[in-house]
Image (cartoon, rainbow, N blue to C red; front, side):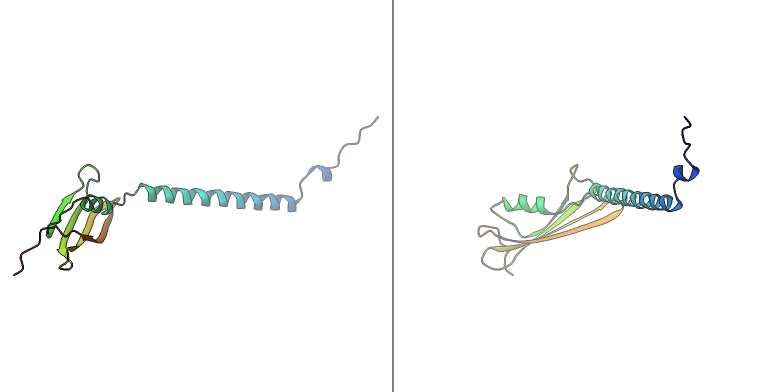
Amino acid sequence: MNPRLPSRRDTAFTLLEVAVASAVLAIALFAILSLCSISIRAARALGRVHVDASSLASMLSLTNRLEEGVDSGDFGQMHPGYSWRRNITEYNTNGLYLVEFEVLGVSNGHEDRSRLNLLLYRPDSVRRAVR
């Protein structure tokens, strides 16, 4: 018995098969690297802290009385490097007050500035003397 040896033509890949396999591999690698890039960009965005005035507004909304004027402070250890400013003015003569909040700070080299305005109805608040 003489087993037939495979010919050289039967054992090799054709140039077309190699080109198609290379193209599929290149497309797959490009897609994987693109997904990694998007994921890294999203992780960096999550690392940035954005501080807004909602916590200040919620604390102020719990009070029954407001006093007109400007007040300022910082967030202490909760958000180091951030400060806030609040301006309370009577919006109308019926106990409606306009409260303007502004939060300033620096996060990852970017200056953050956030503003929030809200109207609160507090008829028992201290009014400024009319001049």
